[in-house]
Amino acid sequence: MAVAFANRGKILHVAETLAIGVGGGALFLSLNLPGGLISGAMIAVGIAAIAGRPLSLPAVLTQSVLLLLGISLGSLVSQQMLHNMAAYPLTIALLALATFCSTFGSSIYLQRFHGWDKTSALLAGTPGALSQITMLAAEKGADVAAIAVVQTMRVIILTAALPLLLALTGIASSSPPATAAAVAAPLELAGLVAASIAAALMLRLVNFPASWMFGGMIASSLLHGTGTIEGALPDWLRNVALVGIGAVIGTRFAKMQAKTLLSHVHAALGSFAIAVVISAVFVTVIALTTNVRVGDIIVAFAPGAMDAMLALALTLHIDPIFVGAHHLSRFVFVSITTPGIVHLFGRPQEDVDD
Image (tube, rainbow, N blue to C red):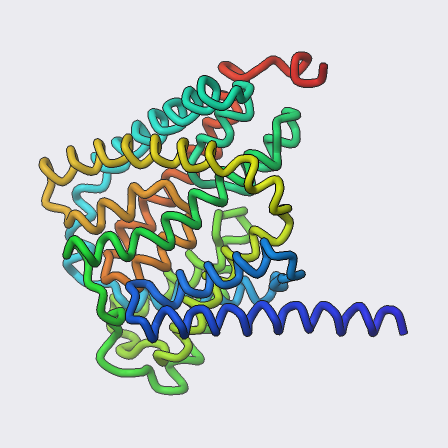
């Protein structure tokens, strides 16, 4: 009886999360706000989570959403996107440098203006790879709650503000996302989903980051790029993926207490501003020296979560291959270098334990 009651409670929490996400996405979409489905769902779920609602989404649902997102992104692949790959080595190298500068810039700000210790400041200032950063913070005895607030606030602000900024400046379109000419036939859809699941499972075997999203994206890109499949997912399925990603991001606030959030909001906003200014410098350099579209560069260099930025690429007519390659590269760079950076520049472990 107790187990059945607990399961029923979990189902109700998931249903409430989805209902709030759909409501928020529908509201923002009705207001014709850029990226409305993802940002509306994210903000609505985030507010409800901060208010104390027990919101959550099971892993299987999150994985399904990421798979649908990857398939949708892969269906947008074009020859022009593949042609732009010639600029990748230069821009990826600059992205690594931008990540290094952003990490240390935000870290110095947090130490000098908010009195953070070096380890916590370095981890909070590192963009992307939130799960790895959180585990490393716990291992090093850093302030996990404060780091989570700064990292999550950065993703929330970028996901909400970036679509509006790009649309207002005319850099990216605020119209509905582009899709293939037609919806794929049922048999093609079944093959597309099956190939995407197979690719995702293969990536999981080698511990590839964001395997469900990139598995779907790789399989869909290959099938669409070779002309094996002409159509795409139905619009309603793509919209489900966007609302789902927004809800997933919003639930990150579910484990945060309002008191903890408020106590670190100034640190989050300040370090975010530092990261944005540093990223803007690199975006400007690349925009002036390459033929890559400004909108593509901005989203690729935005110090936000990989899944959120790729979802924005889908809604804003941004090159998903360029954005995906750069956010994946930064994820790998951060995962490899952060432990060493913390070891060299953070507090010694014995100081943390005292």
